[in-house]
Length: 78
Image (cartoon, rainbow, N blue to C red; front, side, top):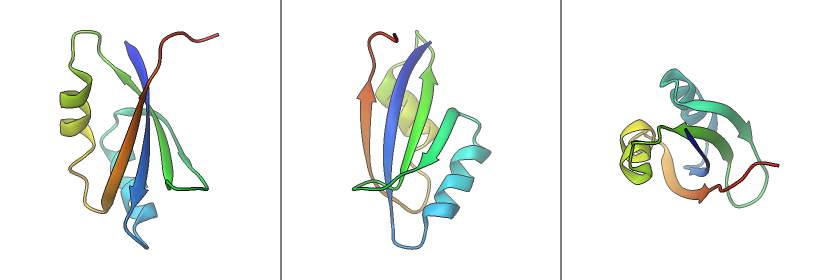
């Protein structure tokens, strides 16, 4: 499994609804509310044989209330 972090910007007033919808899909390992340009930070494990973009698009990016995302690929955990 490959670990990626996805920052999620939500439409105004939709952060809790988006967070609930993300958890309902059972695809994130951890989910945090954050300060700054993005509202949520999700830690996602993507199967080794899956295309990251396709996996995230089908698993998360169609959730209503998401206005923008930023995905960070990881290389090595220390």
